[in-house]
Length: 212
Ligand SMILES: C[S@@+](CC[C@H](N)C(=O)[O-])C[C@H]1O[C@@H](n2cnc3c(N)ncnc32)[C@H](O)[C@@H]1O
Image 1 (tube, rainbow, N blue to C red):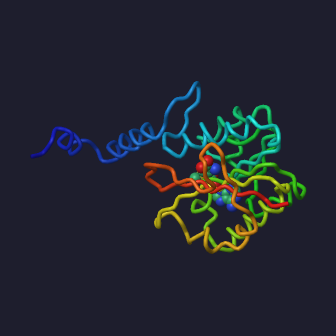
Image 2 (cartoon, rainbow, N blue to C red):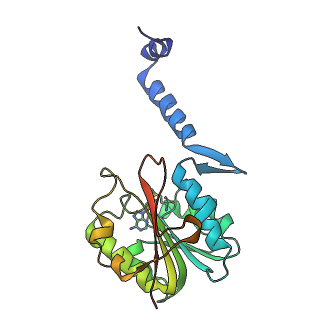
Image 3 (cartoon, rainbow, N blue to C red):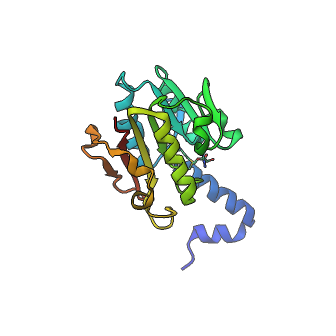
C-alpha cells in the first residue's frame, strides 16, 4: 500500500525532495548546546563531556593541539579558553572553525615545520584517520610528527572509526610510529582503549603517552 508520504514524494520535483531529505538529515545530526550547534553522535558526548573536561581541568596540560576542523569543532575554542589552544587543518577555508590565535593551515604530516620539538602537552587527533589521512605512509608520518612535537609525558588521544568501510587499514597493528608511544590509562574511562557504545561508525578512542 502506498503511504501518503510516498504519494506526496512522487508528485514533487526530484530536486525539491532531495533538498528536503538533506535538510532533515542535517537537522538530525545537530544538537543545540547553549548557543552553538554540536554534532549529535555518541562519540561527541565522550569527547566533549569526558575527554576534553579532564584535560581542561589539569594545569599540566596547557599547550594543546586539536587536529582537523569542521563546523562542529568551532565551539571547542570556548572549552580551551584558558589554555594555549592550537588547531591544524589542511583546508584553508576551514580555518574559521579553528583557534583564533594559533591556527595552522597545513597537513598534520608537516607539524614540525610550525612548532618546536616537545612543544605540546596534549594532541587530540580524532576523526581524521580515514577522513583525509588514509595512506599508510601519511599515517606513519602523522604519528611521527605527533611524537616529535609532544613533550615527554605528553598525551596523544587518537580517535577513529573502527569499521571496515571507514578504516583504511589496521592502524593499531600496523603503524610502527604509533608503537613508539606507551598506552595511557585514561582514568575517567578506566581504560587506554575505549570503544564508544552504540556509535554507528564504531568510533573509539585510544590513549597514548610519550615515554620519558
Ligand atoms: C571528518 S573531519 C573532522 C575532524 C575533527 N577533528 C573531529 O572532531 O572529528 C576531518 C577533517 O580533517 C581534515 N584533514 C584531512 N587530512 C588532513 C591532514 N593531513 N592534516 C590536517 N587535517 C586534515 C579534513 O579537511 C577535515 O576537515
